[in-house]
Amino acid sequence: MWLRVLGSAAGGGFPQWNCGCPGCRAVRDGSRPCQPRTQSSIAVSVDYQRWFLFNASPDLRAQIESFPALRTAHGRATPMAAVLLTDAELDHTMGLLLLREGRELELHATVPAYQTLRDGNGLLRTLEAYCPVKWRTVQPGVPVELAEGLTYQAFDVPTSKRARFVVGAAPEGRVVGYRLTDEHSGGTAVYLPGVQDLTPSVLAQLNDCDCLLVDGTCWRDDELIELGLAGKTSREMGHMPIDGPDGSLARLAGLPIARKIYLHMNNTNPILLDDAPERRLVEERGMEVAMDGLEVRV
Image 1 (cartoon, rainbow, N blue to C red):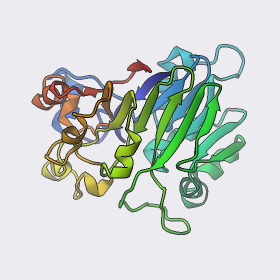
Image 2 (cartoon, rainbow, N blue to C red):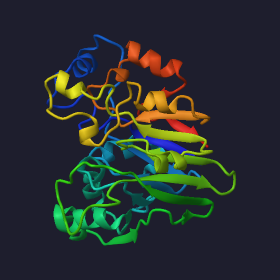
Image 3 (cartoon, one colour):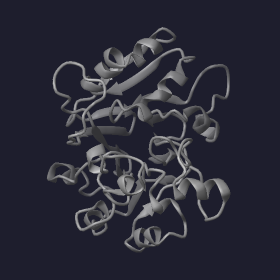
Image 4 (cartoon, rainbow, N blue to C red):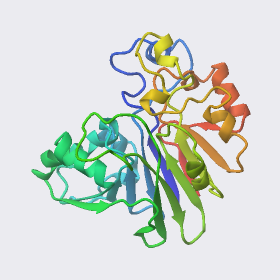
């Protein structure tokens, strides 16, 4: 199984167009070593021929062009077989509109996410005016075969973050993670780009996995408040901070997982700077910081 990081930054990318934080300034003027990053998404394949996208960022077109395996070789046939969503956040779904020229889109999403995209913000109604959308319901805990030799099982990721577009009942199951299994090799990977807390039920999904791609949005819980850029903490926005005694680094570093990789980093996160002490600390604890184009074979 191949995992390709198409975009490793959180919403807004790195640099973010309207941000002048230290990290955004550094990537623009080259004053510190760092690399620009597009908004979070990955692609997965077991044969390097058919690919499954996990989240569709607003940067999807550029991400496809930067990865030859996703480009169309002849006519309009595409190597992209389906898109799977972790939630209905705009930075994970706006790229769907960029796929409107396709003949059909297979979309895996929970009921709340589908309802939000169709009846809440209307994104799917717009897309369906251009191409048919075949919805596959994501049911946490139910194994699903994506392709011969590749299965996934979604799991609930508890969150208290309020949805901007509320449709129907309370949005339980609104955020999910995915546990992927290569049935030939037995290799497993977990994709968890948004997690507010590592609850026992979430940690149980990490048991015996070979690769973890995990939420690295903010270094500190009060990061955006201290920079004067927002009035909410990282956790209030649905993301567990990396630092602190109850942060993700302290809780994940000791787990026996071969590859533990942070992605979905906000532009304010100092681990995006290659020479930052925070970056060194992450690496010393045995964890990695993803960049666009990172490829992992599991």
